[in-house]
Length: 354
Ligand SMILES: NC(=O)c1ccc[n+]([C@@H]2O[C@H](COP(=O)([O-])OP(=O)(O)OC[C@H]3O[C@@H](n4cnc5c(N)ncnc54)[C@H](O)[C@@H]3O)[C@@H](O)[C@H]2O)c1
Ligand SMILES: [Zn+2]
Ligand SMILES: [Zn+2]
Image (tube, rainbow, N blue to C red; front, top):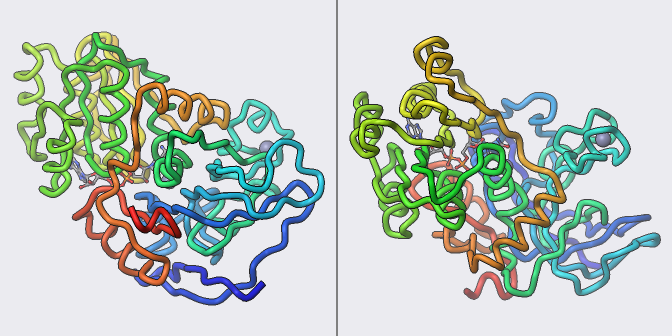
C-alpha cells in the first residue's frame, strides 16, 4: 500500500503532517480505515502546547488522536469476533489484559507499564488515514450511530457516562456543570437523557455558553464570576444542586462545584490537572457531601453507553461545530486550542461530507 498521511504534535502549538507506512495487522490486531478522529481537551492540555504529561499522560511522539472511530479493512490472524467491514470505536487505552484493572475492563488503570499504551499517547492514534488497533480494544458501533458519534465515545462521552453513573443522575436532580467544553457539553446531553430538568452551566468563553443554550443542554448558563455560588443557590430555591460535575479543571470552578452542591449532594471531578482549595468542614463534612474522582471508563460501560445512545436517540456528533480533512489537521488543533468552538473533528470519506 502507498504511504498514508499522519499527524504528530511536536509540542510547540503546531501540528506536523508526515507520510508514514500503512501498518500490517499482526496476531489479534486489525487495520482500520479512519473515519472520524475527534480532539479532546487533554490533547491540548498535555501535548499540543507543550509535552507536559508524565506516565500515562506522557506523549511519546506517536501519531496523535485518542478518539478514533473507523471501519475494519483487514484483520490479522487470531481475531475472534470482529471482521472486515465492521464499524468500530477504539477504547483508547490498550492494556495488558491480565492485570486486575484490565480484567475489570478499566484498561485506563492497567498496572503493567510495559503493555499499557494509550492510542495517541504511547502508540499510534487516529489522526492518520489508517490505524492499527488490537481487537480486544474495539467496541462495535451500532448502525444507528455515525463514526463521528462513535469517536467521541472513545474518551469524552465514555468519561462523562462513567462519572454520571458514579454520582447517579435522574429526574430528581438539579445538576451544575462547571466548564462547557466538549466534556461539559456531553455532560449536559447525557444528564438530559437521564432525566435532569434543571441543568446549570458555567464557562468563560461566550461561544461555548451560547452553544450550550442553543443545543438546549443547559437551562441556565452563567458567566464565571465571584458570585456563582449564590447565583446557583438562587436558581435552586436556596438549596444548591443535588449533583455537580466539574469539567473545567479550574481551581475556582471546582470550589464552586463543591460549594454550590446541597446537603447530601454528590460532586464528581472530571477536569484534570490544576488544584482546588476548599474547607472540609463547612464545604463537605457538615453538609454530608460526597466527592468523586473519575477517570475514563471501562470497555463494558462503553458498550453499555453506545446501546443507551441508540435507545435515547442521542447523537454526540451534534456537539461537533467544525469538521476538517486530515490535510487541514493543523487548523483543527489550533481551533480547539482557542476554545471558540464545540467539538472539533478530523473526518474522512463520508464523515467529511456531512
Ligand atoms: N477524567 C477523565 O477521564 C477525563 C477524560 C477526558 C478529558 N478530561 C479533562 O476534562 C477537561 C475538559 O475537557 P474538554 O475536552 O471539555 O476540554 P476544554 O479544555 O475544551 O474544556 C474546559 C472548559 O472549561 C472552561 N473553563 C475554564 N475556566 C473556567 C472557570 N473558571 N469556570 C468555568 N469554566 C471554565 C473553558 O473555557 C473550557 O470551555 C479537561 O481538563 C480534560 O483534560 C478528563
Ligand atoms: Zn481524552
Ligand atoms: Zn493490565
